[in-house]
Length: 336
Image 1 (tube, rainbow, N blue to C red):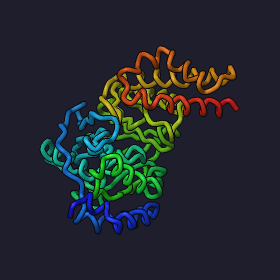
Image 2: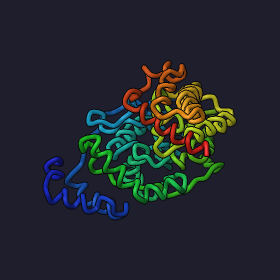
Image 3: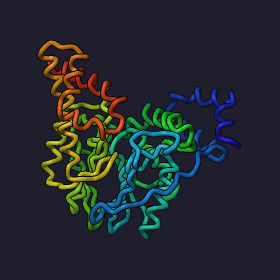
Image 4: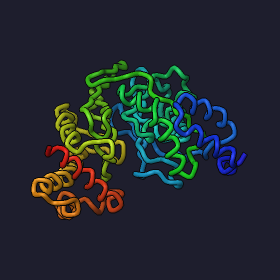
């Protein structure tokens, strides 16, 4: 059956509309039934690159989902341990997950033994489906308790639907597979020669972000707490919380930061801190001076920390207005 004809049919649209906001269990059952008939195309292979002794990454070159990239917008990371592979953030669809599994099988002769989802935005966990299909439903999937609850609730089906819309149905066939095992700040997972330590700093990019420290490599996978040449979506987050989190991360003694979007480097936190300070502090001053949002935006755009990064920050022109608005609202609330 042609997948677009299926979705465009009146009956299919009616069914999808009816279940739009039903629990993830119902959506998953429905997805299982139609998966045999409707499924998006295969995602082309992206190279698996070694970042440190134990960490390998499939780098996503794009920052936002499109029909052309089929939702390939988030880095997928494998931690190679004596006990098996640990996946940190599984990607935005079952097809992306399957691509990552193909790459891992070529590079390693060992199975995936666990997944960690850093937060509840779907580009970081919708790929879970591919791993439980390949390695079994009992595969441990870890996340913060708040992330687990969010994916089991509204966020799960919402993100599945959004990703289909943004990619022109390229991610069809993806089931909502929520994380199953909770992790808190300070939790550690030990896999023989590798220890993973979790860090949670409150509301940063979302209220429930986990950063994953690979102790032996002095490396931290920061998820979307920091990005490389892209501003993190702050709709669910906090500028002040982000700046506080950077202070906490630096205390780990790590010297390499691997973001959910962009390339790993020792400068990721510094780059983000200066940009966020350049957005938030002028808004904070504008509130103190009794200036409105438009005046605050002018101050932000003139700030050297922002102006110097505008040309090489993905989505800057289309998003800076919203980011300033969110910073202004947060600064306004903090002033009371």
